[in-house]
Amino acid sequence: MTTAQLILANYRSPKKAFTEKLSEGISETKVFIWLLIACFLQFLARLPLLSREAHLDIDGPSLVSLIGGVLIGSIFLAPLVFYVFSMLLCFVVRFWFRDLKWIYFRGAFFWSLLAISPLVLVRGVLVGVLGSSFYINVLSILVFLYFIILIVSNVRTIDRVMNAS
Image 1: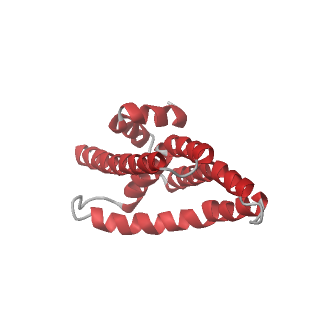
Image 2: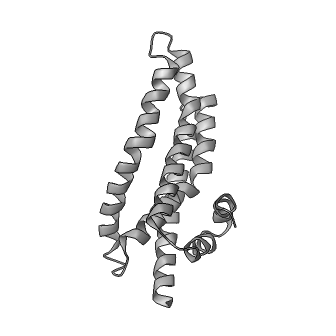
Image 3: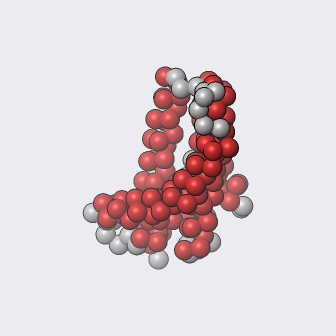
């Protein structure tokens, strides 16, 4: 299956989708591309809110400067932060899964980021249309919880696959 099909299949069965991704092999290049695509999609999710802010705040910065700042943060800084965060989180997860290698944890973490991208895009559109509200906060919490569930599911899948071979 293609990556887009696996992302959609991830909502039905995260273990099956990630197992299929693992069967293709995990490499540093693939993991980095997943991260860059996830960061780019999260940048796209911010555009409706930036447009709303630029439209409502006449005396504030222009839309182009807002987009430029968020683009630099999303494409250049966010991957560095995610790499550091995945390293720190991997040390914590190794208390439960001792044989877990960092490349596999990065694969699980960055695949989870990519897998929640459609939800982040929907949230971005809703924030752009509705603005901040209680319902947007609830949706944000639900997306974050689903992200945590995906990470745990993917790490368990890696442990199961590694112990089987």
